[in-house]
Length: 136
Image (cartoon, rainbow, N blue to C red; front, side, top):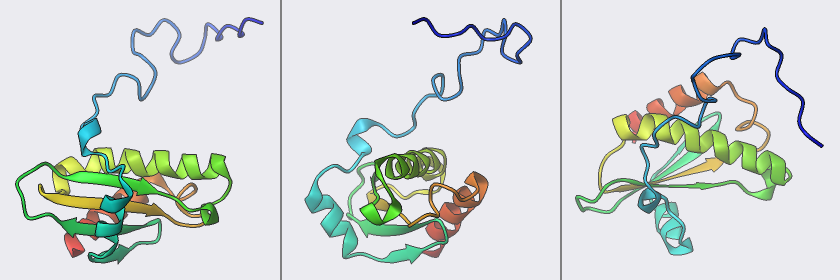
């Protein structure tokens, strides 16, 4: 079955701009994403900043390497759809805020919170991350 065509009078009809999110350059490279459990455990021993939308764990590595970031959501956040939505939102605020406000040589872990991370206003979450980074 072929998908329906977009109406000709839509705001994007005839636009040369790609869809949102596809044309943006990522500021965080794949080698800056934490994937190993050991890295998450080391970050959990560092300072923790609790915000209304998420929890931020910070670990200073004492080197000049670029910052690294990890994302996690437990099953308390909800089913797989809710957890993935929360992690997508955390990835996006990290992509927007950490290059400007983060510190090189530091690991950051953003942890989603139950029924808040996926529904909280996006601009408030960005402000939460900026405030958390200034409090560290």
